[in-house]
Image (cartoon, rainbow, N blue to C red):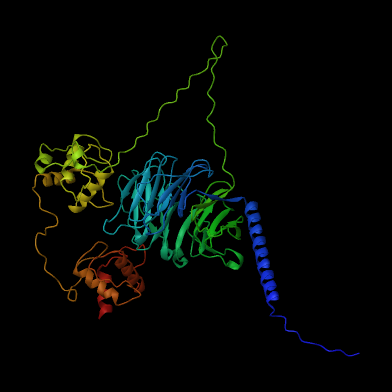
Length: 580
């Protein structure tokens, strides 16, 4: 028996369309919940915990002097107002935002002890505390007109401190930052990380595969060319013996103290990328930050890496492991990840009870000494009408002015007052104008400006920021009016056209003049060499990088060679030959 078939157009019926959308959305939500649940299970299994520090700071660095005490710094490069310092004293259970003298972006911190820490950042910012972060002393290092961007700081102990920065910047101090020197590195690479295997052997890494090694606590450095093809090296860490990991564009491992390296594969099919930092817990175990928000782990000395936790929208920047299976990974928006649980607080030993001869027990009296906290006074601007002793006239400043000792930060006395009186006569040098008799941060800044103005000393040189014999003599000259302004030239130099200028001297960073303009014009002919193309007559970081590229291209010098980044006879000859 036959029948009729009818074709019904029901696929576009509004009710079915609504049901289809509802089904798809329900399916997507179910998948999301499932993945989220899996993620939480994996995080619980690996014992990672997300902690909100109570701030919105974008953390950039962490240093833990012991298992329960950690200091964190924050800051985005060249983003004023983003800097900050946070501290925990109980292994991450609670965090405190510390009072800081600056809001400049901070990028690294190093704490050799619970009380002493050093932090660095943009605009030449250098901070120091000796009381566990209660107070911080701020110092500006480098050229004031073009301040450096610091990237890392490492304190071998409370006195030996090193700072790295972009454009080949490197500072070293042996007196806790009171004075600095600039070891010769002959590089214009961005120096990004400092790591020491022990108190004498260390490494300095950076852009373009830059790797330097020292065996004398940072006094001298030797360029290591073995990782030239590794790209950027943002982080280098090891086990304190011979094992090293260098991460950045790639992940590289050395088992012989940096003499030879092997490139490693991370993630499924080697798909992981963008490596930020590494922490080494031993020969077999290490943690690696990659893919912006993922922590990878190896337990077979880097042969294989497994994703340990994904931090969602938290961008991870640095990692520190102050204990076995106990780590912190710091990231954006005030969030950090903690692996493991903090160790219990160590209790002080019980007092020893000494029985008397009559068998009665004598309870000892425990006297807890009061430890004074010395806080260096901060310069505060006070209205002139309220100052007991402020700015003075030249005659008063010079009257009976004598110095018989070197004055430096922390000095006190009448001679410090006389120093401040002379400096107060120059508002551009010492705008605060306070005469307190105490050599504090404001006096230090003023004295440095004075030394720079009269070309007595500059950042990194011996005596910078101290009133030694040469500086004292110039101060007395200025106070008695027996010196000319440093801005008044002795004679008007003859103008030399850049087109006809010749090279008669070695040009290097800091050089100025028409011959520098000539150099920049020649470099600007090759956009690959000098993409900036600026002809200013000032030999700055961009010009130094261009010279380095020119020397490498024409096989004149490579990083670490004497004369690299400088325009000596051979480089001058090649420049002129290529210009013909």
